[in-house]
Length: 162
Image (cartoon, rainbow, N blue to C red; front, side):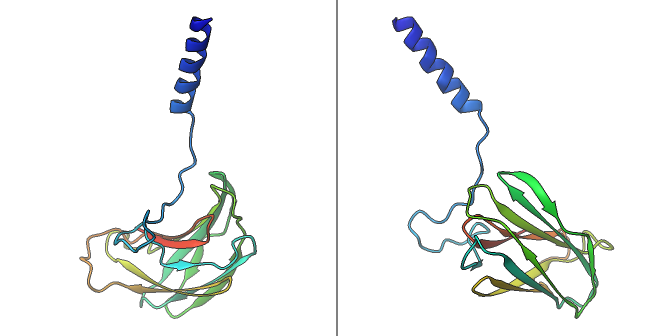
C-alpha cells in the first residue's frame, strides 16, 4: 500500500514539473512601482470588451506594424502587415478576455534599417481606447534593434517590450 501511494505521489510530482504553464506578467508584490520593463505603462478599463487602438507615427520615418491575438498561448488571430508612413494615424480593434493566457501583441518595426533606430512609445488611455504615439528615442544608442512590441495582457495592463 505504501509503495502504491509513494509511486502515485512521485508520478504526480513528476508530471507537475514537466507540465507546461501559462506565463503571465507579474505586478510588484508590494503594489509599488519598481523600475523595469515588467511594469505596465497603461491599463485598459474592461478587458472583456473590444480594445480600440490608435497608433500615431511620429518618428520621421516609415514604419510597419502587425498585430496578433493569443488565447491560452495559441494564436487565434492576426492583422495584416501594415505600412505606416510618418505622420500617419491608424486605428483598429483587438478582442481578448480576462482569461489567463489571453493577450494581444502589436509589433512595430522599421524593415529598411532593423538595427538602427530605437522606438519610444507614449500611452494614453480612456476607458477601452488606447492611444499609442510612436517616436524615435534620441537618447538610446543607435545600435539596438528597431523592432519592439506593445503587449496587452489578460488584466488589461499595457507594456512595451524591445
